[in-house]
Length: 265
Image (cartoon, rainbow, N blue to C red; front, side):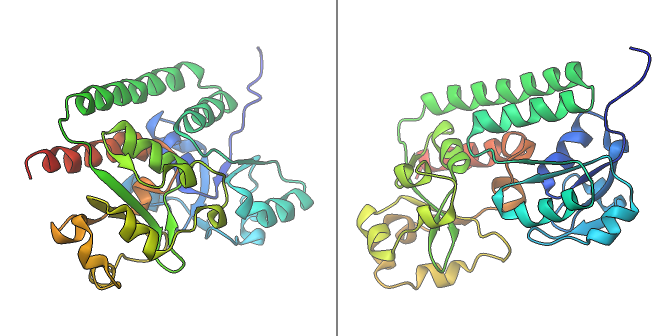
């Protein structure tokens, strides 16, 4: 092929694509990022052009991207406005771990880095195999409540649920996590949580810091095993709520550590 037809100027509306391009050594393609992009630390060198639900369309146009990459139906309005300006947009809707790997595969081939992408995905798959191997030796598999938001209470999205179970936990609201892609399909009430009596509560709120004391103070939560045993744990959204490399690179290690510690309690 005599010419390179791949995208050379990319704007990333969410964090996972930023981390991926850095991981395969192609951060040079990025000309703009979301304000929520914090991984890796070098991300601060990129211009900020968006939040999650809105973006600076004029600034994006001025950067002359040949591709804008985003995530989820929540960004459909941004995509519509950019498409209206004649800009190429790719919005993905990955929800499971397998879909995340498929998404990364697509991104890598969209920029002509098939081999680097293959090597990177093999690394992530090996990390998953390691987690499954460690978890298979656990004598105790804790019941886990994943809380993605407090009011209304939203249980963890599918990839979060899958990661917990890969690492040896039992998601008490697995069926709801797998039910669909919308947050409204993952609502739960306090009575259900108390009745399920989780051994561990993993709180990871998107957009604000977790208030662990407020969780413990909820009506009847003092009856929950996880609260009694001090197992209400805050996890970072930039690791667990972005459907990309961070889940595998850091998320697995953190969950394996939490569930390993549970073995000795």
